Length: 188
Image (cartoon, rainbow, N blue to C red):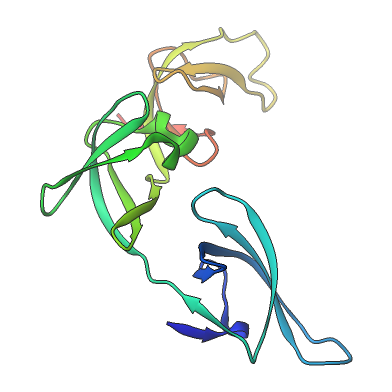
């Protein structure tokens, strides 16, 4: 679908220079001389490279619609991950690098959203948070609880996080999948 260059908004997926880009930041600029334009920071959906482009109102860009489907995580191998469509029970295998560093948070049966373009998966979105087990953490140092401080801990999936002093080995915590940060203690 063609749209005017000044109609681009953050989050839109565009086809530009025969590649798929997502608009990250936009800035509408009206110089003293000449016509207004939209300064857009684009990020390539496949390899993550960035590009800054100027789109004038007279230019048109191709907006792309992605197909989002919920899939259930089944299992992972060295370089690939297998998911099952929740409705059709059809299985797909995608490269592990499509998920990136967040792959360590995949759990059996977890529901993820896979975005695809022309039946080719281009991104995987995990839930915002996951519940993980603390495998090992340092002991509390006396007086450490007086000030707001954190201590290192290792989760059962091997990820290291900083947790409050009251968290101990064997506890279950809620972790952000975006930045691997502690959110709260999991409800029993």
